[in-house]
Length: 363
Ligand SMILES: Nc1ncnc2c1ncn2[C@@H]1O[C@H](COP(=O)(O)OP(=O)(O)OP(=O)(O)O)[C@@H](O)[C@H]1O
Image (cartoon, rainbow, N blue to C red; front, side, top):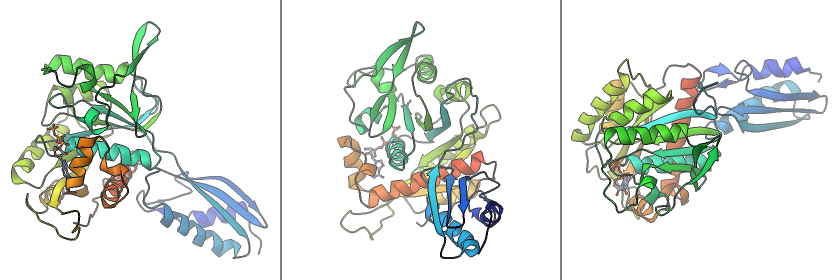
């Protein structure tokens, strides 16, 4: 059977990225194509290393190309990823591809827990990840990452002090908590906190990052405004419990992000503490805060539901002990991995200019 480079490209142009709804060739995802009579090789560049569709896309490529080359020609496909961005040539943080704000309506819904686990899961998938803890009311990231007593180093660049983020579990971190001893009751006034956040953007050495997550204070605050006025944000994720009183505040949060002067796309809602599961009986679900509140809200506002995370004692214990649940292999790590993949997909969809896709998540 004889075939040419263009035959292979033609075959690959029948393979779609299921999220971006276009073919791999026109999306520019096929690189290094080499064709000789005994071997065909190429690289597929996915939009995120946290791509749950990797195996499906690879198999679709195998099927399409083997239909042209037959079974006797060797086929070598390398799967790799380059996270997409709309922040090309950004004046501030040019090496950061996506800035993702994590917000909540109410306090205590698990925003910091979810953000920390998302950051670790994205890093475990192979992405370069940073995390800014801007929660002035209770910066808990230092505890969750077991670096409460650390201080980021500072270096001088052209006469300016530049903060070097602490690196823990593959995630670069800066917390507003690093600026004050953990046991001191610092009352962050709006302007003080805002200027600290600005400094984290302008005077920190983040280097190249695929995703920079920002753990915001609960509710709506000056910090939210400072963030959107300082850097273009890829999108916001909202964490809530299914409880009615929590949902009421989420609606205010969604309203704030949608205001014309803020205008941050909502990447999705995460329902945390969706049900209680005893670790020894993972199939038992107790809907102690109500059932599907976050899921129904996502449907009402036509935003994706990124996931439903159960209330599990191990998640709380992991947070308190400074070793996020996402680091320990098991069902919780898998749940956060799936959540991270769903978020990464929504970022890629957004960056490709596609309308938001409403993700169906099993409850
Ligand atoms: N899915 C979960 N299962 C068990 N415990 C959880 C879960 N999510 C969060 N928690 C626990 O709930 C408490 C509050 O979580 P967390 O500090 O992450 O909330 P928050 O929304 O960031 O709060 P804040 O109002 O300080 O911003 C913590 O003790 C945390 O360990």
